Length: 220
Image (cartoon, rainbow, N blue to C red; front, side, top):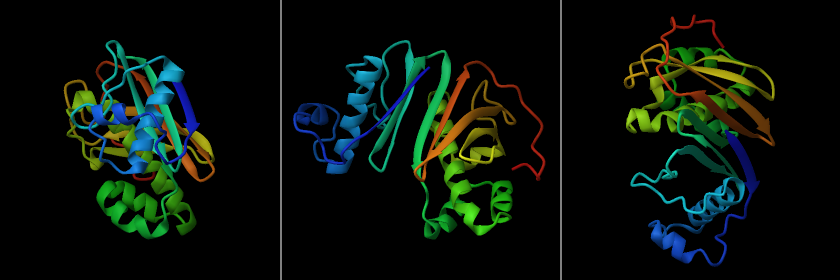
């Protein structure tokens, strides 16, 4: 697995009009165009992938034998790629503003996650919610091909997470998602905070996951 990241200007660089048109982004916002072009420049320079078109749902169509993920936030972009025998995912997420937490907590968290989050001091809730949301996005990208795009936020639950600016997290499937992805299967990744932005990443071998018992309510 190879990981790379860069900063970019949220205005599209000149000369990318044909590429944008070919990927149905000719009439997209300038910000969306800049994000797309930055991702293609990064994957070309970091991984030597010169052609990375969008699929029907907007996700990258990686070359044969390769899988990976892209994410962008606040003028930063990250990408990773590796053999398609692995489950790879990543997400960049800026610290969520406190006014947005309530609706997101209701929509994205399981009941167990909500109880644990709301038991934290308020200053910690925004950082933990941002990390949970980012880790779920990472899991969804890693499992998108196997799950057929039908994975909702509450299909995974955070059952373990380090404190501090960097560490590891564990997500557990709350239902059977697909063959080889049973209820109770666990996915393990890592995170790092920098300038009020978190990067979460997952890199695991493919193959069936082994179901694990549900985490106790006291899990972080």
